[in-house]
Length: 447
Ligand SMILES: Nc1ccc(Br)nc1
Image (cartoon, rainbow, N blue to C red):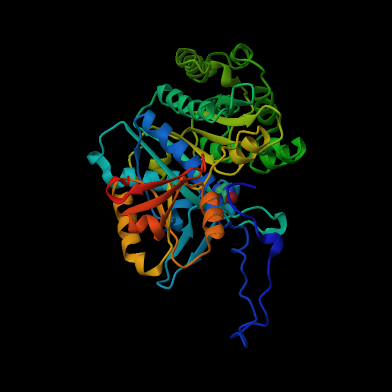
């Protein structure tokens, strides 16, 4: 699954440990467990996907940034029982430092924002595509890495930020041929939970842990979730209040249930829907009070993209995180963002027959008919490349039949043959691979 070649099935076993005793023993040609190789045909799809993500980021005026895939472990040590931190790909480096392959990118963004301090002009709209890691016990045979597109808006407290982010997500989907009939985006706000917890006097310091537990409702039986809440000290009444708020089917129903305490949450969500109507993506949105997402640091609006056929895991997800920077000892700055993985979207595109047909991009293939003409052929390649043509030079003597097959397999437009009678007449034979016509082009007219 995803944009990579899965070779686990053909996992080749290395021979006995230690130096290879003979050339016949093959190294293990599979990538490390849970990781993917990208052969050229895989890279074409991955580059196409990343190109669509980059195009949307530019359409929205976001600026690209980058950070190391290796971070200090402390960036991801959170005590809310999240799966993402339970599965940290962490280790001690040779300098004795506790480091980790990042499981997500948002904490790195927070580190950069803190690093800039007052020097960062706000609002900042940043985007990145980065590989993220988890150390999943292979018992579940799931991948350990994926590439994630992140878009974040730093310094905007209002839901105008979330509306822009949702507009970017729906713009991406539309660009690749996915409609609101195929995909929806569930939207809610953690302010709903905050209001309920306040009503039942659940200590605010338990908020993140309650959210992480409640997020498991999709995966765990209700009684297990209730038990985890009880273990956290959440009363049965509070648990009842939480579960009834999360099962509200409409904003109005939620408003009735929460009363004045829900004013903040309802206000945000109504404003978000109004902005969505303005953008024209309201049909993508589904109010779903049960959406809390599994990251500890969300504080407000949360959302997740889902396939309406219900066959796949969440396609993307995000929300507001106004207090993350404070947890790193800095001043809080209001932020909102999303992550969008490279695997589920490809499964969805496959299911919808929307995968693009991507061929190798070569314009000309050049072959010499006589090795003594190779320097001249290289000069022709240089001239064509300088003019912007993508040229593949056949680097060793090959038969004509091989050259034609190779040129067609490369998706080339032309095959240029340097030598023979044409060369004696100061020209080059040019075979148009679409029309199959062969013409003789004088050297000084080659372009
Ligand atoms: N966070 C995370 C990292 C890697 C994969 Br695969 N999935 C989720």
